Image (cartoon, rainbow, N blue to C red):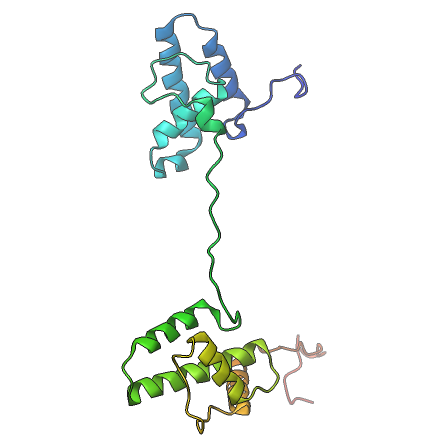
Length: 216
């Protein structure tokens, strides 16, 4: 009887012990032609064990790569694909650098910064003024989502000026949506979500399985 402690460690566990034994046996074959024929048969079995691999790109090459990896790259056969090298297998992927998004105020996010940049490109006029006021109202709404305390319009105007690097300004007499209106809109939206009704099971009646509502 064989115990796991006495067996060779599985190189790729998804193919199981039998596939690994077949590959180990193929390594003992002295005839190259027989080794190649045996390798093709093993790859076919590996593909049948995992039919979902067929949906991936170059699935056949992946199976052959796994065959060589399980053999510790010692299998000398006429492979239809290049045999992977230890250098390629041990090579670490290049480090992906983090995006350096210099967000001045995280509560507003990067997308709002892009909208502000688009507003800066617009020509001066009523359309731009209306757009800037819409942006300022959205800044106030976003700020309240982050901080439920009251916020004055002057602070929002200051943030707008900082985010636009002084290129967008609101008139001194401009007023935004009231804080109470913004908060009430948010609460009304949440109250519109349908709630599950609770059904209370009535006590059993002597004359029937359940007592009818209103019966005595």
